[in-house]
Amino acid sequence: MSSDPVLVVHGGAWAMPDDMVEAHLRGVRNALASGWHVLERGGAALDAIEEAVVIMEDDETFDAGRGSFLNRDGKVQMDALIMDGATLRAGGVGCVERLPNPVRAARKILSESPHVYFVGEGAERFAAEHGVEWCSNEELVIPREVERLREYQQKAAGQVSAKDGKDLFAPAISHDTVGAVALDRDGNIAAATSTGGTLNKAPGRLGDSSLIGCGCYADNLSAAVSTTGWGEPIMKLVLAKWTADRVSAGNLPQWAAQEAMNYLAQRLNGHGGIIVLNAQGQIGIAHNTPRMAWAVKTAKKEEAGIECGAS
Ligand code: ASP
Image (tube, rainbow, N blue to C red; front, side, top):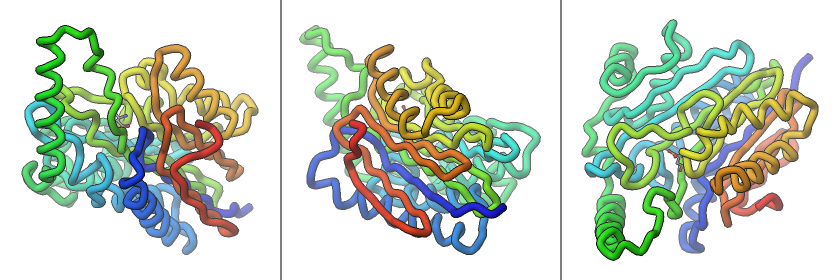
């Protein structure tokens, strides 16, 4: 039986200022168009989410690919995961520094490796051996982020000396991670998440985004999920799998998405956003941050926004 395709993307959840709304909406709409192009021709959900995420990695608006946040050393260090709900095959990369499109490397791992996850140099070597585009780390660094890091480090130094007790490890600024979930005509779902992580993170720090079940998960029997937000609490709660389990228990994706955000806030004072899709084409979008860039497309409608009833 053939399914009506569905595509949902997000471009991060945070207190996005008004002057950044347009760029985020444009970015998620472009991603939607690219992924939909695959789905409408009968392509696989896996291919659609890869293409959608590549568009957002290439867009400097988002914290993924070029334009990512910088780590403490001033370098871009990225994580990505892609997962196929039909087979549970997955591909992940962590702490890569020389790939403009980490999701492409993740996809190659899913399709062409017996392994599931590669980090650092080994991930980059795997990518090169499989024809994935490389670049220098400098090419991924943009002036906006150099300035943002400088300001943050200056402020942080002041706070430490003032000992005002502020938690510097709870990034309250932006979360521009990108993600996509899709359902294809064959009834298969898939999910992908890609990120530059959090601003001023320690080198080697990995967040939730690329960890199976934390920032991304897909299983035809439950749901495809992608999260964004403060990674440490999301990881501790294994939040994507937690949400998918609630869908497989018979709950609607929208309910599960909202519950996940409540759980994140109540259990660990975490903040973020989530998109959820099941193999019946039912979707969930929620965030406990003031805003989250999202977009949805089906054969009947196309919508994009920065707020949803759930926040
Ligand atoms: N979740 C990501 C991380 O902690 C950040 C984000 O969503 O923007 O690495």
